[in-house]
Length: 68
Picture 1 (cartoon, helix red, strand yellow):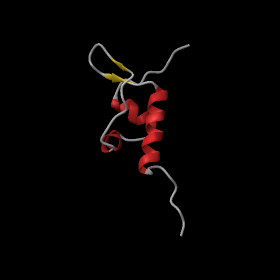
Picture 2 (cartoon, rainbow, N blue to C red):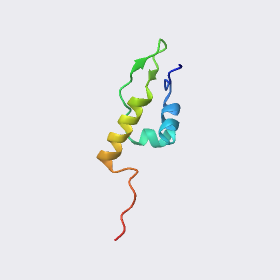
Picture 3 (cartoon, rainbow, N blue to C red):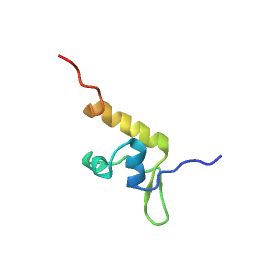
């Protein structure tokens, strides 16, 4: 069974449903699970999802608006 590895910031953004610009506006990236021979950061999907969930919880992004 093939395992998914996210190998670029564009792939990371797409995986999380963001644009590349939206990802960079966060001001940080998750810690890389691997560094390729060429020096690229690579992430496992579980790492990306956990980092995104923590970011959204901390900053409130992605929560539905409350009605007054």
